[in-house]
Length: 387
Image (cartoon, rainbow, N blue to C red):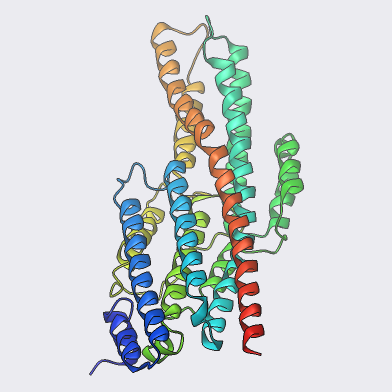
C-alpha cells in the first residue's frame, strides 16, 4: 500500500487527493474553488514541464552558454509570474497551512537574493576579462605587419587575464580575504593590482559568504508535501514545492556557471522523477554535474561555455606567442590570424550576450523582492479578514 509520500508523488499534483477533498465540501462556492485550483495546478505543471524540456533539448555545445542561461532565467521569470497568478487567483483558499508554505518559499527567495548579488559580481569579472581580450585584439588584429611590440602588449594582457582567472579558481576553496591577499604574494602579481582593486571594491557579499552554503540553506527541509498536507493547503503546497525546486535549480545553475565565492555544487535534489515536471530538471542537473567532472572543467572557475572558450583561445595564442620569431613568416602570420579568430569569436559572444544577461539577473532579483512583498501583504490581509 502506498504511503502518503507515494500518493502525492505518483499522482504528480495529487489530483486524486484534491478530487476527494472536493467531493467532501458542501458549499457550491467551495467546490468551484477546489476545481479551479486543481485545473490551475495542472496547467502550471504542464507549462513548467514544457519550458524545462525545451532547456534540456539543447546540445552540449549550447548547454551552459550565456544564451542558454538567459533562456533559463526567462523560464524562471515566466514560471514565477504564473505561480504568482495562481496564488492570487486562489487567495480565497489561503489558510494557516498555506501561509507556512508561502513563508517557507519566500524565506528561500531571500537567500536567493544573495546568490543574485554574487552572480552580478561574477559577471563583472567576466566583463573585465572581455576588456583584456579587447586589448589582445587591438594589439594583433588588423595590423598590416605584426611586430614584436604588438606581441608584447598582447602577451601582457594574456598574462593578466590568466592571473585573474587563476585567482577565481582559487576562490572556489578559499575565502575572499585570502583571494585579495594573494595579489601581494609576489612582485609579478603586484603589477596587476588594479584588477584586484576593482574586485575588492565591487564585491557585494561578505568576505566569509559561501555560495555552496547558501545553496544548502535554500535546499534545507525541501521535501515533497504529503497527502494530508496537500489536502490541508488546498493543493497550493504542491505549487510552492514546484516553485521552490525551480528556484533551487536556477540558483544552482547560476553558481555552477558563473565565477563566485566558494562555489559548492554538491546539492542533493530531493525531488524524484515520479513528478513528471521534475524529469527535465533532473536531466539537466545530471548533465551539468557530468560536465563539471570533465578534466578540462574540473578546476575551472565556472562551467560557463564562454569561460572555457576564453581559456582555450588564450592558451593557444600564448603557446603560439612563445614560439614566434621576428619578422613573422607567412606561415606563422596565418597561424596567428587563425588563433585570433578564436579570441574574436568568444569576445563577440560575450559582447552580445553579457549585458542582457546581467539585466536579467537584476530582473530576477527585483522580481523576487516584489513577489515576497506582495505575498506577505496578501497573507496579512487574509488574516485581517479572518479576525
